[in-house]
Image (cartoon, rainbow, N blue to C red):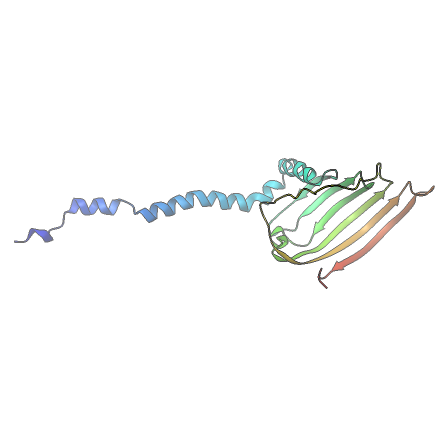
Amino acid sequence: MDFAEIRDEEADEALEQRPGCLRGLFRLALILLVPLFAMLALLPTLLSTEAGLKVVLPKVNAALAPVQVSVGQWSLGWLRAPVLKRLRVVDPERGVEFTSDEVAFDRGLLRLLPVGFFDVGQVTFKRPAATITPALKTPQPKTGKAKTKKGFFFLPVVDIAAGLVIAEGRVTVTGFTPETFEAQQAAGTVTLESYKK
């Protein structure tokens, strides 16, 4: 009688109960990637909150200094079109202040990612107002080497397209002449089909 072919049932059960190395790595990858994808999917929703606005705006203002940007409220979404309410941009060096009750895009953030052809779509400014006054101080020409900022993220842009719609706009120019110039109820559409054409 050959005992080599008799199976050890306890050893077989132990092998069946022990998960494979690949199964363990797959579970670990799921545990790590599912929260990451959920966080990425919810990122526009989290940034749309007041706390998200308070985190992002100081970074934008630091990057654009001395220009100051403020937004009363915004609504962002990967597929839903972004809307900015009570936008205000002030550039004291150039004497320009721009406000708009609402800035609405016609496409979501996913379609606004600049990969290859950057198409902003149609951007509508509702009740914008621009005030231009003489600059407080004249900008000094920069001397020496300009600092170059190295970004950590780069998306290649081959071409740009955009559409701009202004509804119920107002432009005020003060300080250049004795009387103030003001244009009200300005409306118009500007379309850039291609930067290269």
